[in-house]
Image (cartoon, rainbow, N blue to C red; front, side, top):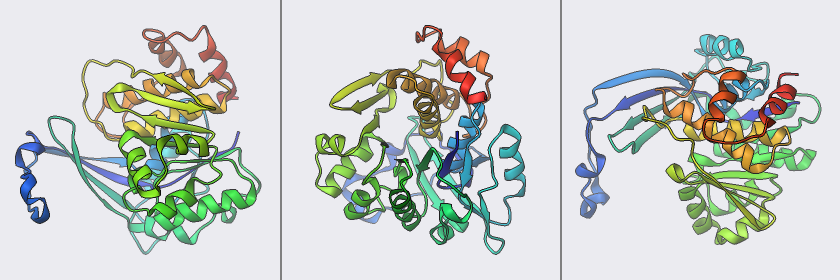
Length: 323
């Protein structure tokens, strides 16, 4: 099964603020904000939406192809991804720039204020899947990337008859309503969080019901309330997998997508696919860093069954993924 994951590949700089952002924001003066937060710790991690998704897919036994643009500092990161089973042969390295970087500051309520330096990602618009891959893959995931690149990749998929999942994520504020409508046109599935869904609705003028009608499978994550999966007029609710404590929320959505796609591409019912995604998300919440979690198929199945029921389906899912 050939799955190409497109999107950002980046280094993550994660910081913790020992307070509450809300206590330092004066609503009446949002038009002239000038804030600086003194953080107690910072750590550097592998990151980027596409790389995060590919990483957890590899843990689940798949061998996704990662497609994106990186800089001259990608050497160690390449070795890391390949060590867990991610195919980096489709990554384009550009030696006169640095790899993109993500800076996230998280407060005690797990709210985040983030910045993103695009670096090599800004050049992703110059490359097509056909430049590095012959044939038609089973699925292309279009995750947050350079906005022009996202639009171009969606158009390439439509033109070549490639099934694709549209995941605009953090680029929703940057994309116009017309760009969002163009990106989701013809998509097999779309994954967004509840806030992004409302923002897309406002930008495009489409109601949530109309969005559901346009996309065969629409997944709207609801934070601590789990996720809602819509298909053919039916909504499936998927609860979160319970954990004792949250270390850091960065990358949780990417892990959810990995498990969801793993299940969907192996023929699992949508509820089961969503539950697999929820457990993947739980693993990330318990760690600092988007690629700090690890598990075997056996460990995953055993933990899954402490909260969800699968009637032996997980063994059938893992078998084809490992084949």
